[in-house]
Length: 476
Image 1 (cartoon, rainbow, N blue to C red):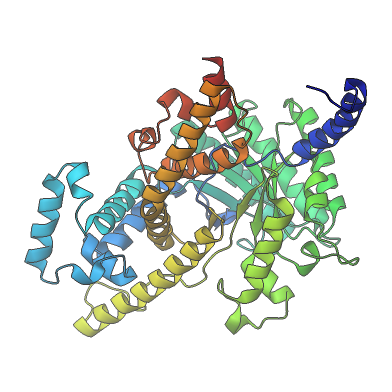
Image 2: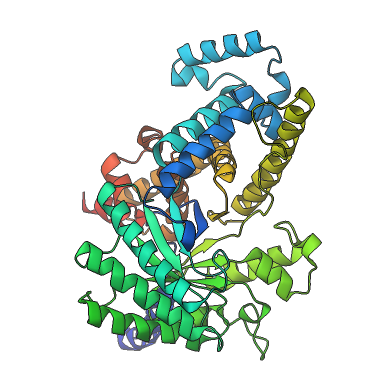
C-alpha cells in the first residue's frame, strides 16, 4: 500500500506526541485501586483510648437495635425500596424474617424484601466485625485551643494509647491524627504536637507506625503549607530512623481560596503537587467551607448548594490523579432528647421520632455524596455509624445488577479484543467499573463470589488493576 509520508517523519511527529501523552499519564494516572475507607471518624485526642473503635461499635450496634430492632423498622424509617409492602405486626415481621433466613441467597434475591433485609443484616455484621474503618485522633476542632502543657500531655497520652491499640489489635484499619493548621498563629503548635506524638509513639512501638497511618493538615490555602509539611516529614523520618517517604498526609478543602485563588484559578492540583507525592486524600470541611462562603450557622448543612459547587470543582481539579476524596459530616446526632430507664411512652416515642429524623438526614446526605462520586465521608458520633453503612450498602446493592452487566460486557469486549489481536485501550473505564466492585467488597456490601459473576477470576480481582487483568489475558 502506497503512503505519502516517510516513516522517519511520522516517527518524529509521534515521538513528540508520545512525550506529551506520557506527561499527561503521569499527572493523571487514574483512580487508585487501593482500599478507600467509607468514612473517617473524628474524635477529640483527649478522649481517645486504645479500645475506642471497639466501644464505638458496641454503642452503634446498641443504637441500631434500640431504634430499629428489625429490618422492617429500618426500611420504613429510611423508606427503602418496597418498604410500603412490608408487614406492620410484630408477629408478621418475625414470620417474614424467619422465611427469608431459611432461603438460599439466590431465592432470597427474588423477594421484594431482599434489599431491606440484606442491608440491615450487613449493617449488624459490620458493626460487630469492623464498625470503624478510619479514625482520626483530633487535635484541631475536636480538641480546641488549650494550654500548651495540656496539649503536650495529651499528645503523649494519645500516642501511648495508639501503641497499646496496635499491640491489642483494637485500632481501625486506617488511623491518623489531625494537627492544627499551618496558619501563622498556629503553625508552631501544629509542628510541636506532631513531633511529640510521633516521638512518643515510635518510642513505644520500637519504630513502627500503625498500618495506613496518615497526618491530616487542615485549613490549607497555599502550596507552601504543604511543602512545609513535606520538609517536616523528612526531618522527622531522619530523626526517628524511618524510611524516606514513610509519612503520608491528607489535606482539607474548607476555604473558598482553595477552590479559586486570587488569579481566578483552581489551585487544588498545585497544592497536591506541593506534597511531592505524600498527599493521599482531600477531605471536604462542610462547616468551615460554608462559613467561609458567609452562610449563617442555621443553614450550614451538607445539603447547601455551595457545597455541591465545591465538590464539583474538587472533582474537576483532582479527577484521575489517584487522590481519594471525602465528603464532610452531618452535624445532627441521632440521639434521643430523653435519657434514663424509666421513660414514659410519650418520651420513648419522642426519642424514636428524633432518632429516625436524624437517621434520615444522615442517610440522605451520605447517599447524595455517593451519587456524586464521593465514596467517603465523616462521622462524628458512634450513633451515626449505622446510617453510614445503611446508605453505603443500599447504594452498592441497589446498583449491583447494572454495574455487573456493564463490567461483564466490558470484560467480554476485552477478551474478544485479546483473541482477535485488536487493541483494547480503555483500561481507565474498566478500572472505574472494577473499582465499584472493589469498594463494595471492601466495606462488606458484597462478597468475592458476587464479583466473580463479572467473568473475572479471583486472582484477577485480587490484582485490583484492570490494566493488569488485560496484560494477563494478553499474555495467555
